[in-house]
Structures are given as C-alpha cells and as structure tokens.
Length: 456
Ligand SMILES: Cc1ncc(COP(=O)(O)O)c(C=O)c1O
Image 1 (cartoon, rainbow, N blue to C red):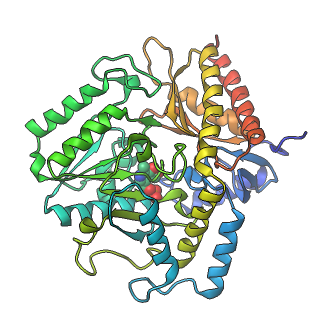
Image 2: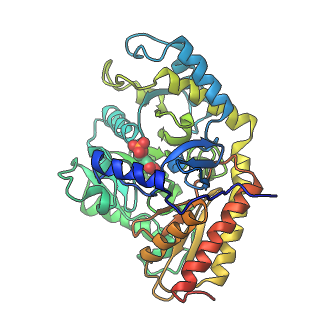
Image 3: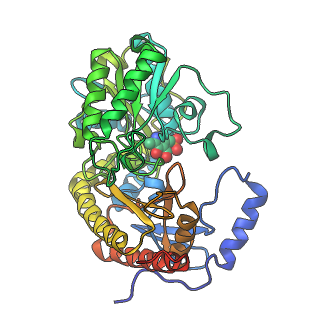
C-alpha cells in the first residue's frame, strides 16, 4: 500500500521558496515561519504544499484541528451559515448559533452548577476576559500563574506567560499584580527529585511549599482573584501537573476565596483522552477558557464559568465586535457533534497509547531521549544532551524537526528550553496514518541522533 507522504521536490520546493521570499518582504520576522513550506490544501491529517508535496500533519495548526482539517460536518455547517449571514455583531443582534453553543458548553464543561459562557476571538483574549471576570467578582487585583506557563501574546496574557525568548523580550512593561510560582516539572524538579514521565514521585509537594512561601512573603492570598493554570503545560513542554499538586492547590484556592481558572486552550476538546483535562483531576474549576480545537479551524474562544461569577461583570463590560462570529459558532457546533459521534476523546486515548509506545521504544534506543510524558494524545518527548546532566538539547530538537519535515512530517517543538517534541496530530488520524508519520519521525531521529553519536 503506498503511503500518504509524497515528496516530489526537495523540501522546501521552488513554489514554497518563492512564497516565503515574498512573505519575508511583506510580513515582519516577528511572526515566525516554523516550517519553510507553503500550504495550498489540507484534509483530515494531510497537508499538500504549493509544490504538490504531501505531508502528514503532526502539528494540527498548533492543536486547532483535533477533528481534522475540513471536517465534512464543519465545512457543511459553515457553508450553510454563510448562506444565511456572516456577521451582525452579537451585542447588536442575537442569533441562535451563539446561544446554542453557549448552552452546549455550559452542559459539557466541568465547571459545577449553573453556568454562563461568552465568546471572544483568541485564546489570549479569553484568558484576559477570565481574569477580568474574576476581578469583578472577587473585587481583588492579583493573579497567580506558573513558571513555564503560556497564556498568549496580549499584554495581560503575556504577563501571565513565562517564557522570555521569544515571547516577552523587549515587550514590557507587563500588567501588574501577577505572581508566579514554579510549575511541578518533575523531570526538572527544583527540590532535587529525580522524577520523570509526568508522574508524581513525591516531588510535587515541594511546589506546595513554593505556594506557601508566595503567600507568606510576597502577596496576601486575600488579595488574589484567581489562579490561572494549564493542567498540562502546552507551549511549556507537555508537562502534566501531578494530581496531588492540583488537589492541594484547588483546596487552598477554595479556602481563600480564590477562583480557579483552568486554561484548557491546548488541552481541550479531546486532546488528553478526555473532553477536558480537568476530568483527569476530578477538578471543577470556577472558570474554564477554551479556544483552538473548539471551532475546527475558525477563530473562536470561550469563557465559561459559574453563573454568579460570570454575572458580576456589568452590562457592556464583556464582548467585542467579532466575538462569537456566526460562522465560527456554526463550526463549533459541528465540532461538538463530531466529538460525540466520532468518540474523539476515546480515539485520542488510543492514539496516545500508540504514540507513547513508540516514544518509549525510542527512549530505550537513544540516550538523547530524556523523558516521555503526557496525558492521552498530548505526549511530549524531551531531548537532552545526556541523561546524567539532563541538559536540554535544543539544537538536536531543531535538527529532528527539519529531518522529519524532509521525510514528510510536519512536527513542532515546545518547552521553555525548546527541546521537547510534541505531537498535535488531528485526532481523526487512523492507525496507519499515525504509524506512517511515526515511522518517518523515527527515521529522522535515527539520522540526527546517529549524527551526534547519541544512539544506543
Ligand atoms: C494554553 C494556552 N493558552 C493560551 C494560548 C493563546 O491562544 P491564542 O494564540 O489563540 O491567543 C495558547 C496558544 O497556544 C495556549 O496554548
């Protein structure tokens, strides 16, 4: 059986190179070009570039197309909505797709009790709005976030984001009243633990100590409106928080009237093997922010929260011109149908088991693989110069990504040190496609780890 990957030219081919040359003169370099290819078509988990090369997509538009590119239900729903109207502005005139989508998110999100949802355009905007709502409800200014966290590129979201290069350098001053504590990153435990695999090995409680220290030395918990947390870090390197740590944190927040905001922008909509990562932790956050795979490729983000919290913001305090655009809402309703009908979270768990098995096999063969971890299909592979020092190997990660692309797989890195390989393949990819992609990445790893003498 011929595979899906089809490479007709060198990568990038001449047509891709030509468009990237135009891009360099028209678009600032601050908007990165992570791969040098120009895409003309995408379907399911397959991308076709301007030179007719076919790639397997392990990036999924950075976690946006869990239901696959051009899911037929999504395409049909958007077309049908476009035939009715594309925009009227929800604060001006009410339309049903917005209301129905809010109702559905209120039903399926793990927030407890009566809920409300409103829509904005991007993940960063959703995070900012969740903080606004939390401040309005509590009357408190401060927000607690985590090292290695990523919450977006707008000013407050950037204040909550942890990585200096490239996200923060030169862009300050940042919003005040943001306090950061260490994320329980077991593989690089600050307390000297030797954890890995994303599992709690006793080191997680050290992070609780950091929390106590913060509230004794730096900020009064009674002035904290919210704790904003990714339960598994996305950009930070696919690091799941140990369950004990989340339990202690949630209890502390409850005790001090601090709202828990779960940022499920990357973990959401099936990626972790559950619809939401909160479900792995038995966590009912006060607010949950979602975006990315919510609308199958259209820009849409949501803030869902306890009704009494959400109703604290005054009339006119929330919203925006495009938030909850009808095309995006129609797409999201079709995504939620597909999530249910096609049992996407279960498929994610199976795909994740497959990916993890391959990653663990690579770990047994290559000393450059330091850690394999993650929930469901949100699996990361951390590359190091050697297992003794655990020094991050960003250069090797870069070479691996290039080698994978040359073999027909679009793959992304993550992590504060740029040394984590992450798979965000559409969750509709079947086993054969997944295996073909993993075979190509394995060949790439053999080539680059072999080059640097790290095999065996
Ligand atoms: C966890 C998390 N929060 C927030 C964001 C920001 O989302 P957006 O890029 O849509 O603003 C991202 C984007 O990668 C994310 O992964």
